[in-house]
Amino acid sequence: MSKADTATTLTPAKGKPAKAVRADKPDSQGMDYLQSLPRRWVTVYIPLLLFVFVLLFPFYWMAITAFKPDAELLSQSGNPFWVVAPTLAHFKKLVFDTPYPEWMWNTVVVSTVATFTSLAASVFAAYAIERLRFQGAKQVGLGIFLAYLIPPSILFIPLAAIVFKLGLFDTRWALILTYPTFLIPFCTWLLMGYFRSIPYELEECALIDGATRWQILVKIILPLAVPGLISAGIFAFTLSWNEFIYALTFVSSSEVKTVPVGVVTELVEGDVYHWGALMAGALLGSLPVAVVYSFFVEYYVSGMTGAVKE
Image (cartoon, rainbow, N blue to C red; front, side, top):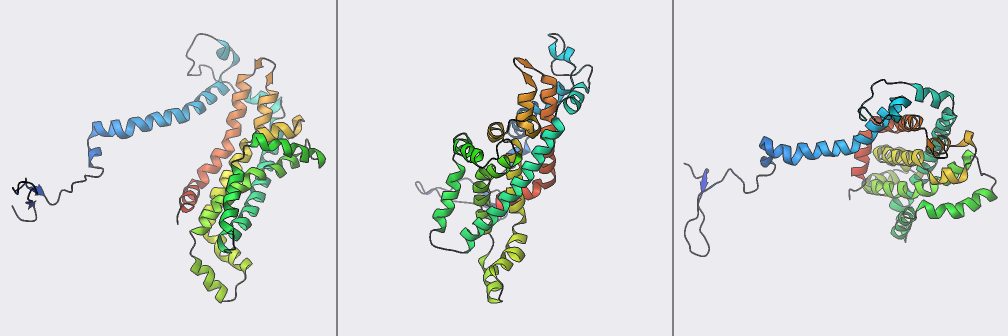
């Protein structure tokens, strides 16, 4: 056996040679303990299966309920986790007998406009705080983030008075102008972290070459910050799409409601819950967000990881 294969050490207390240890076998085995199949099942597969089950079971229950006929929904017998005779009656009722297409259009318009408005304001705020280096920039950034921590259930009270005074009650503008109050703080904080990860040398070289701040922002910072912009945009769009409190407070007409409010208020009549139509509306309402995430998930992950880099 060569010297490279074994190593002999002395015990400090007794001065006796210790057992020979393989030099090519490190003390820390890393992830080698996962090589055993039973250990992989215990440490990887079973936890992942439990996580996937807990995550996807509500969507599965929503889907089978949307396709179940009323007879199966009200029946006490049969398998509750499967559909015997699937039907599209609930989707037909939702699309043709309720203003659901208008709710969907209102949600798309409000979410899209509020998202782009919030992103535009957040870009300017984050760039000014992180790149202009003025006195008190850190305190301003902290204040913006703390504004995000204020719960909407408190903010909607003063916002309601402003909406009434401006004559925007029961209009889309009431939602478009109030959603940025909780979108801009977090998007600004997220973009601040991403802008911080961009080297300052690029901006300094551009200033030496005679570029203006606007040119630097448009031609250097924004192209490099595309993952961060997409990440903030997805976050803002998702929050706008799922928002409930403001939409319930500032909108009352059925034709102006968004999907989260319309499904709950129009498909529940007293103590009668139209579960099939409710689940169908929830299923259709969740598809656009799922599609957006599926297309931009890589940018979303890179944007979130880039935002924490120093």
